[in-house]
Length: 401
Length: 120
Image 1 (tube, rainbow over the protein chains, first blue to last red):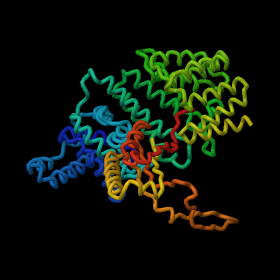
Image 2: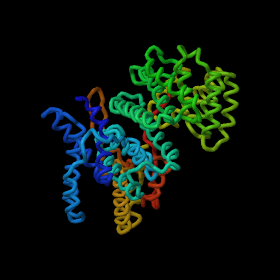
Image 3: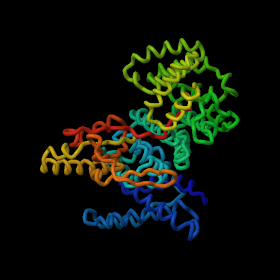
């Protein structure tokens, strides 16, 4: 093993081994990060250890002991001495603590930005500096965020164990949301930040894959993994060389990743067949319908409309209704789509959203009302806070002359 | 999501609350910033030097030309700004409301452009 990404994959195992033996998730997590830093400095020079996992466990345990000893005023000396005996290295009893760690890092006492940061560090093995770069904040800010997150988990009294069965479904939904947000952060278009953030997309898919391995029977976990794969499959086609967004209907579909599409389709097909149906499975199914169309004009819009109709029932949300309006326009004509938007506009949550304005502009363009469409794209461009989206909307306005 | 909190004013406005109140306002702002740093939400907070120190750079024919100013044509100028990275707009507004300047001059909250977009 000489691949650093493979080393990062050992982090949940190493951290789990320490926490199970010594408790103190916060201190163990710091110790594992310090061991990773030491490994990055030593291994390239002194050669890779025979068992990277055992090396990391040993060094992390030593770091933990050092911290406990330097804290001697508050801790008993014997406790520190006990730490001198490292936990048994690889082999013997097998533990996979990834799921426990995911539940802990996505604890409901934390805000989503904190859940994301802690998950990337304690499960993904990313350093604070890497996470800070990905989110364009100073390293000190990210370090504080992670440290505060660990304090909160401690204050909430969360132990290193799976949540009680009655809570697991709700807690799993938070884990899924965090993985989805990590993916969304990484799935971005502009060149300046693309390299660091592409790693987030890969990390999210890896986390979803791990989770699917650990809870293979959960349809929503399979649905999320499918959704991420089916979306990421279009990555090479969704940006032009200048970094601007290419809409789905104009993408060069020969650039799509057929292997990822096949895997995503298989996942969502199996999940939908075994039920119960959830929002990630439905979104994955919609992505699959798009991905299976060899050209945009043979897209099975009636199928997409049917899926959005179910999705709106399962998880009512104004953004879903807007997407359904686009599908309605494709199946029944732009006038029908615009009529649906009028009913949506009455909903206070979405009345001023740039999504509503841009979807209306799109439907007006389909209806041939170029002036109103152009004005709509311009207004949506003013309202959005997403830079790639703003550029995209201004381009669409400019195309209408 | 990142937000910029901007506080505008002028000499008269900043001086009008009295030296003691101004000192208290600065202490309160510092304490709030420390709290936001500890929660991992503070990207940076800066007070602006007086307008007297402003320079304007223009490049004409490939040559940079630096002039003093511009000086107060506007009635109010930027006094300080804070950049936050927090959960959502509601949280940014809550933080703005806790800024002591909100009790005097108001705090402008502006979202910064971000790079994320899931579609297409």
